[in-house]
Every structure is written in C-alpha cells, then in structure tokens.
Length: 179
Image 1 (spheres, rainbow, N blue to C red):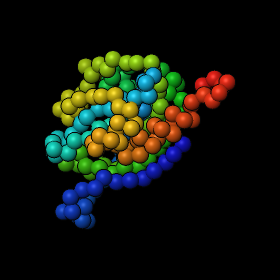
Image 2: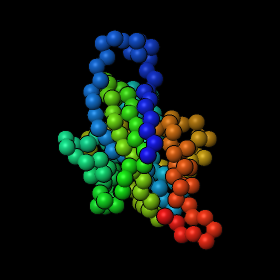
Image 3: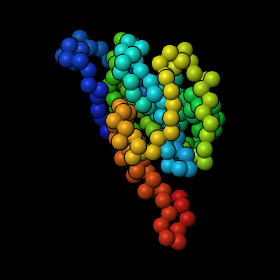
Image 4: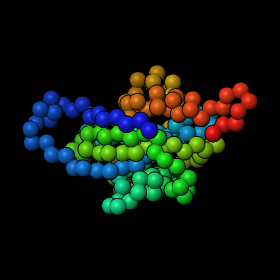
C-alpha cells in the first residue's frame, strides 16, 4: 500500500495564521473503476468558496469506531447506489493524510482508498445527504490520461499515477489469468 502526506494550498492570509485549528477526521474512499479503465469522480466545491471546484472519489467520513471498509461500502451505497458487502473491497490500496478547509472549518483527514472494479454502473445520487446535495455539482467517469490532460483540479493529486499502477498490477501477462 502506498502512503502519502500532503496539504491543500490556502490563501496566504489563512496559511500563515498561527491560530488554525484542525478537526481530526478519518475517512474511506473508493476508486470505482469500470471495464474501460475509467474511474468515477464527483465534481464538488466548498460552500464557503463556490469557485474552488475539484473532482474527487466517492467516500467520506467514518462514523466513530467504523472500520474503513465498512465506511467505504456505506459511502459508496449512499453516493452511487452501489451496495456491497465491505469484504468485497479487500484491503486498502492507498492511504494518505490531507489537510483542507471545507465550509469554513479546517480538517486533517487520514483516509484509506479501496479499489473496486465493476463492468459498468449507472450512478444513483438519491442517497446524497444535505451537504452533498449542496456541494456536489456533477459526476463523470474519467480515464487517467483524460484527467491529466483536462487541467481540472482533482484529489488525491496522485490519482492518475495510482490508477495506472493499479491497472498494471492487475493486468494479465501472456498466458496468465488476471488477478
């Protein structure tokens, strides 16, 4: 599993503030990849900064004492309509810690990413909660190369490289079956 640490760049007035207080948060996210190798991403924005748009994977904050795979499965069902047993997610394929602001609050989030491959999926967002309804504008399936070429902001920043690595690690060689 790869692990990284990063933080979002903020305005210099906020970034230089010594009074910044982070709310710790645990999260689980899903790299939902279809048969064409495209990953599902949501386009969201911070309600406090509506012009700050970005693409991100399904997932979100864990409930107290909730296991990451269970939280990832719960979030996937709420955000896409895809329901599955958490054991179907296996082990996390990537973990990182990120710092960001959302709706006027600063967060330090430790998050695990799970890979789930599907033939295809028709996204159903009727399970969005209030904040998701107010801060998610769209969804789209992206190829890693399209994401890089788009010039769009996406999280985690290493997503295209991660997807490429995961694609290679599960690709079958001549005469082999895929993992």
